[in-house]
Image 1 (tube, helix red, strand yellow):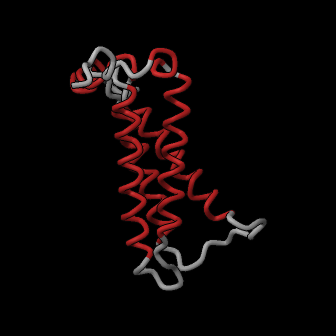
Image 2: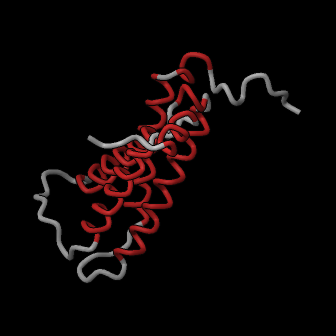
Length: 146
């Protein structure tokens, strides 16, 4: 049985779940490895299928990113949504750059856009289904406009 450490409890009190950090790291490594392949064996079933695959992969990445933090403890779902989208978008850019060095692959702004859109859609759904969808973003409520 794994022993709890004081650091784990401290992070959880702050609303951070460290096991999901490792899941995210592993998922990013999987995407990196897949991007290192000269050819991926996926049959083309319809036009735009690769963009749907990109969007889905990065929606999953955004979901994992959301799991790292506890919305209830942080009480900043809009900030978390923005951070998830920025993280996924930056990873998508780095992944496309990485692919530009792989024989048989190329960098595509359209792929990066699909990556980012996947993260945006997932984060939007999380916001809509969570507290922010019911009350607005708590971190922006009560602020003046000037």
